[in-house]
Length: 389
Image 1 (tube, one colour):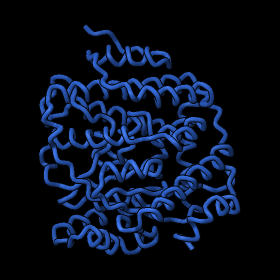
Image 2 (image 1 turned 45 degrees about the horizontal axis):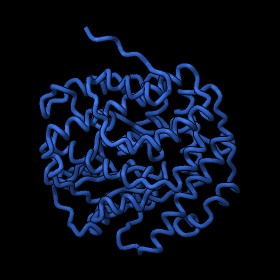
Image 3 (image 1 turned 90 degrees about the horizontal axis):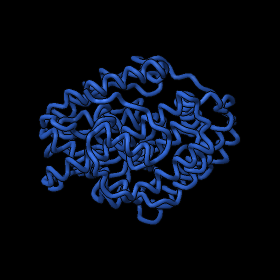
Image 4 (image 1 turned 90 degrees about the vertical axis):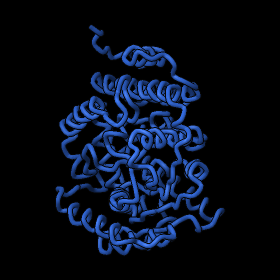
């Protein structure tokens, strides 16, 4: 009988050793990710003020990522033909959080010619040893347990970000497996890591994202020939890496006034961070998040000015609410395609089955998070003038 899992201390070697013990695998591949992992762990120790349960949650999260890496390396050694999979990324949604990007992603992803990553795949992307190709029974069972834990510990999450095992989900967890992207700042108070990421080169993480898409496509052959629709606010932290890795992808940017999107975002991350610490100060979270996300947004604007708008399409939040099918058609036009009857039927069905009133309202305010209209207007002045006024 195998030993029961043991939660290790938040030390790199101990975490790697436990992941190896749980998987029975030893080759973790290129250790380039040790640098971002080290930066994140140092910030966690210095700034996150983890509770005892928070320390366990964080250690288990890292062990799961390391286990994923071990399985990825093992799978690619046993099936090198995976590298020959042709991944077609039609579009990637790159936007501020809470701007309608999830609705856009799921709406477009519902079309029969498109595919997206699902919630369970995001968390358990690589086959377990002995798993029959195309039959991820154990992984789905593990995903169900994790989903139930999320629902128990964050009961308000469904009103903020509706989820389900087979719901389309963003790729942020795959980037987080490389300890890069914006996921850490959503789960932890780690401002020094966030500052470090602003100038970090994320190309290696995006190379691994492309490999992950190949693996998912190889596992589920019905995806072959379909085009991927990607989405994550995390892409705002590395738009150059995204564009270089998927050079044919149309970049969709959804827009909503930061006076609404930023306090909504702060409400979400404050709730998640509370899972791991009893000492979170919402009034500290708000101003930091506002300035950081404004900086990333303005960086994307700089990039668009340098390379031109040919690869971009803009979607206003209100248009998405009032005229979603028109929005979908406009995206198809920018992709150089015509929406066929099957596409229209699938998107119409998704819209009919996913009306916002299906979920309870997400209630938030500015003052709770140390924000004011004046501060957000100052942080996002350039962006608001260009896209919101």
